[in-house]
Image (cartoon, rainbow, N blue to C red; front, side, top):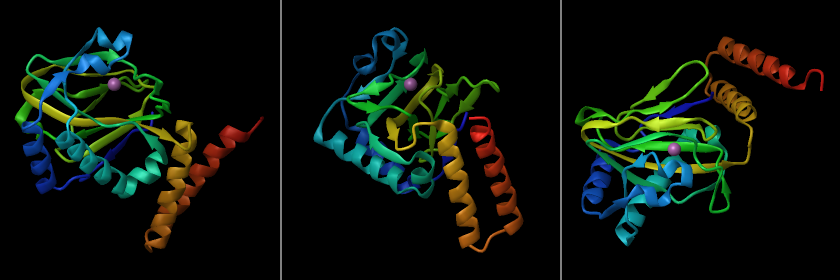
Length: 220
Ligand code: NI
């Protein structure tokens, strides 16, 4: 499973602005926007629609799409409207898979942009079921994780404090996770070369890409 961690999507100052704004918003039951299966396990709150909420989410969307790794990792074609989600003590979102289609958008990638400082709450990790083992994601405020929407995942119960995050979904120009990873590898190799970086590392990266392309194409 290809998972990307995007550091410093928002600066500390931006995080504080968003949190202050969020504290003034009205929240409603998050189960309203869940599919039929997910509704049974979803217990969180989401910011209700308002011009202030929309401005906050627009700030988050702009910051995310401006992040240098985001474009290369996701190759976004469309994005769903974002959601500001809040989990307080006792709230959780049990294991589920995200809906494949949301408002005419095919969900290829899911993301969570963390707004709460990890020290300010307990529990609340995003837990992604991976063949290699459970992946627990709990990032600093202002950082985001991007993961395949095909995965089974949950938000562990919050046992103290408040977990605030922005979540959303991306339809990528490249539907296939492995193909997207190959293009990402090429981007990385080119960036290293263009930046006058380690040629030996680029060589290793190209060998990896050749090998993975051969695996996909051999015997077709
Ligand atoms: Ni989900």
